[in-house]
Every structure is written in C-alpha cells, then in structure tokens.
Amino acid sequence: MIRSLLTCLLLAVCSLAYPVMAQQGQSHEMVKGIVWEVPGDYRTAASDLIEMRSVGVQAVRTGLIFDRGLLELADSLDLVLYREIPFFGLSARSVQDSVAVIDSLVQQLLVTGKGLRSAGPIGLARYSDMTVPTVCPSLREWTSQIRAAGGTSYYITDFIEKDVCSDVVDFVLLDALDEESPSTFVTKWRESHAGPVGLARIGTHVDSDDLFGTRIEGSPEYQARFLENAFTELENVLPEYVFVHRWKDARLGLSAEEGDAVTAMPPDPYHRRYGLYSAGEEPRPALYVVRGFFMGTQTVFAFEGGEPPEQPLNWFTLVGWILLSMVAVM
Image (tube, helix red, strand yellow):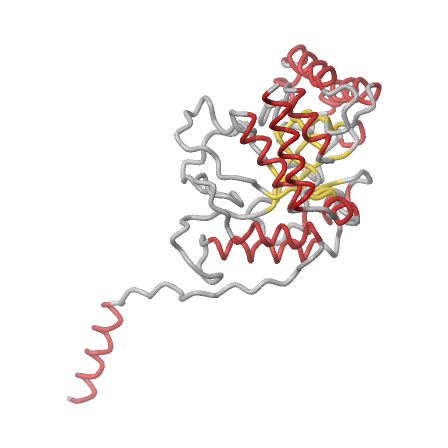
C-alpha cells in the first residue's frame, strides 16, 4: 500500500514538472541510455528512475531485476530496462558449464516481466568469449525462448572482427569506456558484421571532485567535455544504442567477491568514479551534457578550462644553464 502511494505521488510530481518530456525523448534516432546499479531501497530506486526520465533517458542497462513493482514503475515512465545475466568474462567452456543456471535466470526474467514493456532486452553475456562457434547454439536457444515471449536478446563483447555469434542474437553492444573516439568501434563492427550494434558504455572517470576545469584530466568538467565530444562524434555514425556509464558512482568498500553489482566486475582498485552523480548525491556537470543531448535541447556547453597544474622545477636543467653561463663568462 505504501509503495503504491509513493509511486503515484512521484509520478504526479514528475508529470507536472516535465509535461513534454516523453515527446522530446521519442524524437531521437538512437536509443539513449544509462548504466544503473539498482539501489537497495525502493524509494531511492523510484527517485532515480523518475529523474532519469526527466533528463531524457529512454533505456537503462542494469543487472537482474525480479521486483515487478519496480518494472511497473519503469513501465509508467516509458523507460525500458535492459536486464543482464551477471556473468562476466566467461570462457567458451564456462558458458557451456553455466547453461542450466542461465536457463533458469532467463525464465525468471521472462516470468517477472510478462506483459510489461519496461521488461526490455535480456543481456545473455558480458565480455565472454564469442570467438568460438560452440557457444552460439546456446545463445540461439535462449534467444528463441526470449523471442517466443515477445522479447529481444543481446550480449556485450570486446571482440569485433573475430566475433562469430552476433547473428543469433538481436543486437550486440561494444565497450567504449574511456575511449575518446567511440565511433571507431561502431565503424569497425559494421565493416565486419551486418547486425545492429550499440555502445554498452561511454564516458570517462573523475579522479577528484576538487579538481576543476576542462583542461584538468580527471576533473568533473573534463568528464563533461569528454561526453560532449563523444556525443558530437557519434552523431556521424548513429549507433542503434548508446549507454552512458553511469548514473551514480559505484559504492565503495565492496569486497573482491561482491564487486560491482551492475557490471559484475571486481571493484576498481583506483576507485575511479564515473557517475553523473557522486556517491553523495551531488550532480556533476556531465549530467547537464547528458540532459542536453538526450532531450535535444543543447549540444554546446560552456565550461571553464581551469589552470593546468604547475610543472615542477627541473633542477638538473637549472644547474645546466648555470654551468653554461659560468663557462661563457670565463
């Protein structure tokens, strides 16, 4: 009862604040998405989804979601959740050994999302070995089950020229995180394959929120300019899907076994932060870049350059010049 009331209240606020949001989002040619780790409580999750929609997000890459209430909320917001099997970097043999588990997870996802448009494509693999043909029959079978239920399937791969299974799923996503020219991934894929392709992750990290200016690598402004340049470049190749990494900074303090729930990867040893929001819920300039491009309202942004860090005094060079001066005087 409380959950239903909260949902209705949040939806009412959202509809009043953003009356033309859906029409603007639907006019774009790419599916525009974000990577999201589902918060532990429904209220925070609901707030995240509502704000995502308000900045033009159409699709959300995430992990397993079996909470039908959350799917119903996303459905009412016209958001599509791309739910992924949380296995990372499996060898071809490991994929075969995991068939029974993946079978079960696929069926659970189909049952939970039945009848809801928000229960979108199912990601069958993340960065697993797709260069071995023996993996393809399992992917084909899972895809067949998903299509029979009215859904679509995909996987994320690091292999481009050597990938051999892309024709048994509906589309493939490539990883371009921290890459200044993400369009090259799309172009290379299309040179080797005919199927639809998108980008699972674009963006770059923030080293410290205390850094300032677009000329300072690792600053929030640098992150914002990085995304602005990436979006501008992608307009020339128009991948079918693009996902910004990520909505909020990953939680710190995770053990190596827990890792990052949204990527199924171990914690970043450098504690790099990719969020449009900090872990403390503070928005970064990159959020406004995403909103501008996703809503189609702004594509050029003014950020201060900042001062580059001072170069340390090179004592060897200084001593060398002093010696040369002394020789010249003598």
